[in-house]
Image (cartoon, rainbow, N blue to C red; front, side):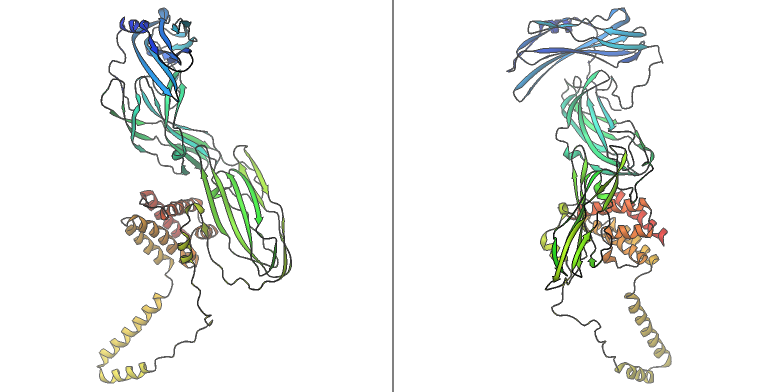
Length: 603
């Protein structure tokens, strides 16, 4: 790990520190008089012969004189190696605070558990003492290892990776934080700057970045007896997709910072400790109809816009799952067949909401129902089983049945179906582009089977004339050329074979790596649809959004391929409507290449 040191932070024992401390420091502030003194040791467990830090902090939040009147009593079990002191003044919202820090570098001479006390300070004419602190000294080589990621006493700045839980369920939200632990007595946090951050690979996880939603990325935390200023460098929501031990590799970071007394910032390379999550499989006893993607805390809502309609008049039914979790992956409950009702394909709408503590939102299926006879249309109660990781149990959300009255025939039946597979309000294009994307309607109805064009009766006579004029070899070559052109024209209108489509997609993938950003994203989506179309026996134009995912799932595609496709579609959708989209990353092209391999295995 990187280390920044202030020259002379530990110095030989001299009377200079005592003279400075006994002179005292006066703080001018507008708050009420008061103050306190605290003591801490770092680390709290050492081996005989090793050093540790004993730090006193004298704080005043008013107009007062701070005086260290008595040093702690270390006895004969310790030897003072050096001392240092510093002063810090802060003013926040009209409240001022002055802090005087005195640090003793101490060597432990023999093993045992000791209580350090006896320090005394004067704050505004009142004598105060800090609470006693304990330190345990072990024989050489016998001290236990500190917890992973614990900042070391000799490092003024440390990068630490932590998770909200180390034993999550499959699909459970885990908050992963990369945080800088800063020793303010040796490092100035004002000039600290992160130059670069290299994240580890996240195979087997779904990732959502939450850094931009962290309002105040700084806090104070006491760890192993030492106070640190903690700054959040990156906050992510990760969702494990498979059970078992999942190791997260160390994150690397380059920073620049200056210690007190330095005029130039100095760089340091930091690395966190690795982190291993023990991902638990979902327990047995799942309710009927449960889908493994339904992990979170959800509610089910079913509503109809119309309760009284006429025959052939459309009804908009909305089925919504709302709550906390990666709601974009949930499987909505299916609507059973309804007698006397024509059901159109649903339109899927996702509304993802992110905060600094959770990821959630809503996923809605808008289903258009067209009644074909009078009477009452009954929408039965729908069931949505899910696993709640907070409770560690399965739950089932159930809707209420709905009844819709259908009267006489409407004046005009529905004439056109619009095939829209996915809509996201957050990334919706302008209305003009939506209208332009709808299929054009003819000005007048065309016949179902247009009459074929009359054959060209001149061609046989022309061939006979050429046969009489040309030599036999030239005439035969002319006939072969005509037949080859006819065969080429016929193949141009035929769908390519799955093998040819995959070969063409791989060539296009190589070309897309060097294409500009918008064209590269569009080509990634298009080549996957074109490669899957012959395999699924569907036109490429119908393989967009969730339709391609659903078709591959029905064909038996593996879950890891479906996850890669969903992630690629999400990133491409975000880039499509961005002002200046960033180019695809190498991982996107790698996902596309592996998806083509999965399609080849399905042949």
